[in-house]
Amino acid sequence: MPEYPEYLAAVVFAAGGAVNAWRAPHRFSAAVLLCLAVTSAGLGVAVRGAAARPAVATVLTAAALLLVLAVGLILLADGVLLVRRYGPQAALLATGAVGCAALAVLGLDAVFHAAGGETFGALLVAVNAAAGYLTLLFLVFAGYAFVWGRGTPPPETTHVVVLGAGLDGDRPGPLLTRRLERALAIDAARAPDAPGVVFVVSGGQGEDEVRSEADAMADYLRGRGVPADRIIREDRSVNTGQNLRFSAALVDDATPGHCATVVTSGFHVYRTTLLARRVGVRVHVVGAATSPAYWLAATLREFAAVLWLDRLPLVGLSLLLAVPVATAVFRH
Image (cartoon, rainbow, N blue to C red):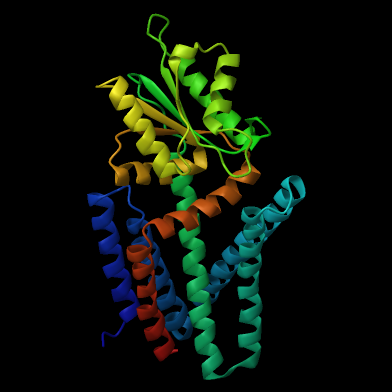
């Protein structure tokens, strides 16, 4: 066994992440590998450096625990705020639950540290490594969501596809209204002599909705002065993949050689881009603004959705963390 296997694992993970970032910069696997590299290197410093450089190891451990504490408190506070504002919805409750889980890690740390012994020491290393890795991975994903959500549409856009979201009665809810306003802003920003874009409103009728989201969006756009002949309705889709496929089929049939821009919420841009590539739809995706409190909860949901989207490779890669954890525990 190499003398410093955690550092060797960190180098291997970092190299794999660099290759992935170069070959497919849109894939989240590069971020997973780079986070594994950072976590492996951190394990090496914290466990092996404890004797030679105790101050460095202490600072690193404290920083990791403070990071988990900060993320846990923010998520818990955000979940409580949103539940009080919008009611006990499952996604909002999940945000608070994840925050509680992060804080529970610190409680386990205290228990394992107080109990002492080799077994609890090994558990302490494993729990902290997993919590630190997941926290770092979520923060990196939040960076992805923020950057991808700030894209701009190409000037040659001919069609704007607006992805559906929840209705408030028979009218677009706040999230969907912001998407529609973003679509209208794209049209307004065109040169005065350029033809107006064609709006494709995409969304079927949910089980708890009184009408299709496409109909509600079309009425909203007409109320803002958009002529009916510049609105195409796609009212069959029930998820983002269908939004993209069904809308693309309508536009391809009507306007060959078009340039389409998809409008969704900023936190949803990255996953929409991944899905568009997966279903073979060539579009640009831009984001509409979201309130900061809701953005965090929605980004957490998107994080879970992206991990599930490529669950076999991403979860498989994440399980490789067991290698540096095992070697760190063995030398602990």
